[in-house]
Image 1 (tube, rainbow, N blue to C red):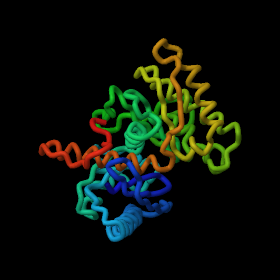
Image 2: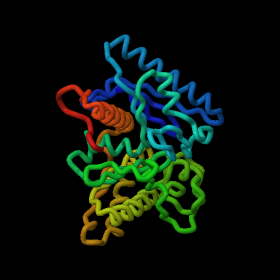
Image 3: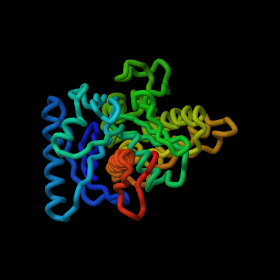
Length: 308
């Protein structure tokens, strides 16, 4: 599976096996202040270089393309409008990638893809109910209930970044005030402190964890969840300080009998998670499309997520 991750600061691509192994990868930084076609050209060049290298050197046959992208987006990424890539508004990503690769393309939001990855091979393996979050340039989420990844009416379920954590707080890109994304994302931290999130103070690491824990508690209370898996460059970069603060906040706000004891934990797959997740989106889409024709395309052995 050719896996593609569309982030606010980088595009990444990799080759993910049916066992969830990341066989090869490439990345390119997202340029600021360029137009939509410049972004796409950068992505297309990286994808073409990777696929050429893999097919020529390893004899790998790529079956389809799986994509995880920051949202909002239309279902299956027919078009995407990532808040952190202003040049892409209604960009027809799925069609452009299908034209480029001449392969089936299956897409979903990046945090939903991460939920698939962590449920498949990561920290949520064996759990049928959990929240996965990315705290990075932006903040996203994916929710698994009864072993099903929630889609919602338009495929955008799980946008925990727009839970209000500071009423009357900073204006978010969505238009509301006090959203988690407006208060705790990498872009927000840079705007608040005037410093890169790679150079945080102890106080900002604590505050970010506290706000993430507050938002996670809201979701746990509403949906009867006991596990929250968090990844992303900000969360993982802030490390123990962030996670300790987040757990304290989660404990403070989960007081219902069924939500008490909810825990928050780092993703297990680290920086491989987004690409493994995009691969899982692709394997899931390919399996479903082949199932509709009553054919199972997967090799024998450990299998990727099914109904998730």
